[in-house]
Each structure stands twice: as C-alpha cells, then as structure tokens.
Image (spheres, rainbow, N blue to C red):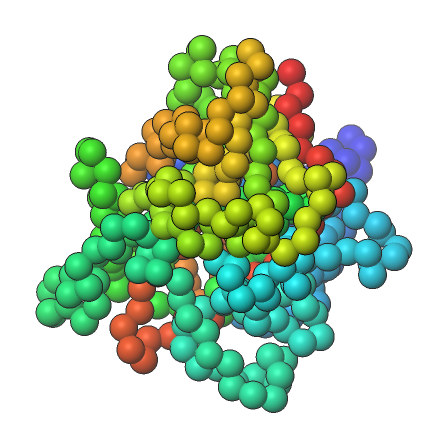
Amino acid sequence: MTLGDIPLAANETITVTPLKNKPLGCTVTLPQYCGNDPSKLNEIDHIKLYEAVLTYLVVVIPGMNKFSPQSQYNLTRSFDQSLPQKDTSKISYGHDHKILANEKSILKRDLITIKEQPEVHVLGNGEWNNPIYGNETINLKHPTHFTFHKNTLPKEKCFNVPEGEIPWTRFYRWHIDSALYKLYPPLITTLLGLKVPSKNKKQLVKYGDEESNELLVQQAATCFVSGAKAFDLLSEKDKEIVLNSKVMYAPHPYIYISNCKATNEGLTMVSEKKELALNELPPWEEQHIMKLPLVWTNPVTKKHHLQVHGCCVYKLFLSDGTILELEEARKTIYQWMKPAIAPKNVYAHEWSNGELCIFYNRGVWHSVSGQFDEGETRLCHQCNIASNDVPKTVE
Ligand SMILES: [Fe+2]
C-alpha cells in the first residue's frame, strides 16, 4: 500500500455530494485545514473542487457567512489558468466598469462594489451599511421583470398579495455573465448569499409561454439550467448546425438593447426596431466585437454546452454560409433555447444565509427571479473575472 491509497477522512479532504432529485448541482464540505476558506485548499483539493464545478455545474458550500471579499476574489480567479498569475493588475471584472456605468446600460444597477476588492460586486435589495461598501448607506434594488419585459404580470398578483396567496413572478433574464464585447466570458462566477429570504417565502414563476408552464420557487431563488442539457435536447440536425455556427454580439450589447424589452421567459428580446444605431453607441472597434462558437466544450466532462446570450445576440453565422440578421437570429436562438428551461430542467437554488454558490459560467445559463415588497431585504456578494481564454468547440 502506498500513501496515495490510504483513504482520507472526510474532514481532511473535500467531499462532494450530488444534489438529490435535481437536474444539476452538488454540495461540498471543506476539509478542516483550510479554515472554512476554499481559496486556501491544497492543490489536490483545489482540483477536486474545480472538477466538481465543471461536472455538477453549480457547487453549494454552506456556512460561509464570514467569507471575505479578498478570499472570494482569490477563489474566483484561481480556477482560470489563462489569467496572469503574477501581474494581477491586468485582471479585470467580467465587465468594463466605464461601460457598466453608462447611463443607458441595462446593467447599470450592478455598479456597487467592495471598495478594497472592486471585482466583488454587491447585489440585493434594501439599505445596507458596512464600511467595506464605503462610508455611505448603499441602497440595493433587486431587478424585476417589470423594468425589462415587454409583457408584465399584474402588479396586484406580485406585490403585497393577501395572506395565503403565492405571489407571481418571472425569470428576469436568462444569461451567461459576460461583457460580450472586448472581454471574454468568465469561467466561473461565485455568489455569496449573506442575507436571503426565508425558505418558506415562495413565489410562482409564470413562464407566460404557450404551455403555461409554472415553477414554484423560494423568493428570489437563483435559477440555473445546463447548457449541456440544452444541446442534448436539440434535434440531430440542429446539433450539427450549432456545432458549426457562430453567434455575433452587438458592440456594447447591453447599451445596444437598452430601449428594447424581453420576451416573457426572459430568453431574448422582442424585435420592435428599438435597438440603438451602431453610431449612437459609445466608441467601439470592429476587432473587439465578439463572434463566438454557439457550443463550448466542457474540458472536464467533454460534453458540448449550448452557450448563448439570447438577449444580446446580433447575428447568426450558420454552417452553410447563411447569415441570419437580428430578428431571425433571435427567433432561431429562442427555439434552440426554449426546451432547456422547461420546469423539470431548472435548478432553482433556494438560498440559506451564508451559502456560497460557485457556478461554471461557461456551462450553465442562470436567471434572477422574484421581487420584494417594501422593507424586504437581501444581500449577496458576486464575483467573476474576464478570461483570456476563448471559448471553443472541441470535436
Ligand atoms: Fe449573472
């Protein structure tokens, strides 16, 4: 027997437990030696954690209330070998801050950061005071479909509903975390739920689709679907097409669509010719426009993932040389994406205070859900880092 054959006790190495009866996800317990800080794992455990994230797509670690923004940043960047290891000044958040701050950007609310670790953003709802956010009270606003969707639910069904009734809600926007201009999509996003609604507080996601699908979730659950499942659900013909086609995103896509509204399921935008003209956007260069494969192959499982941001799509370049312009590109992508968000394929993460979710941003799509009544609060820290690695299809 060699040293490598001696099994480690559960508290000496990480343990990975797949979630039961869920389409994806696992929980991880940390070994004692890392002091509840997964950025301090030894090399073997770090590889195990990386492989768990890419295999199960969402890893949940409970009991992380004290996880510091510095450790969250270190953990998030530790998974991406393409990032400079020494000159960390060249590492940037998944979005360009100047573009995020643009008055028209639909992401403008995501601007509050930890002062000493600006790659970690503060999300949630309500007023919060903490010197790590600066000297002033911050006021967070949970995004709701009311500001982003073309058709909105009746407000009386969503806010301050009578006792015994379950408020309705929608998926806000299915997406991959990415600037989709100049910066390549982050490999990993980490999301730390510091103060979350009780698990008893339920809301009902109304898809507003032809099937009248519904999904009962915890208030403000974060919803995930697997891009590999989305690929598997395609017909053989469509698999062949997506494997050999590319999607182009508009320059500064979140500003480009700022006057547009989303479809009911939050998968894409309604085409009403409300997009900004390219010359109305902040300065952009042709060389930084993102033209990416539709399928990104998972380096651990070797599975193909359909990874596309349906709201930001601009054009599709199909394998036979056809170019689909905006409206047709949206319709086609919607058809490819829709089966994947059927209720049985969605993992709606129901948060407990202090949970850390680590997700493979190049293998899942995710969406915010829910809304808050006056006085209800939520607080999360989120981090992702733009990669230097171009997403690829590997045959
Ligand atoms: Fe996100």
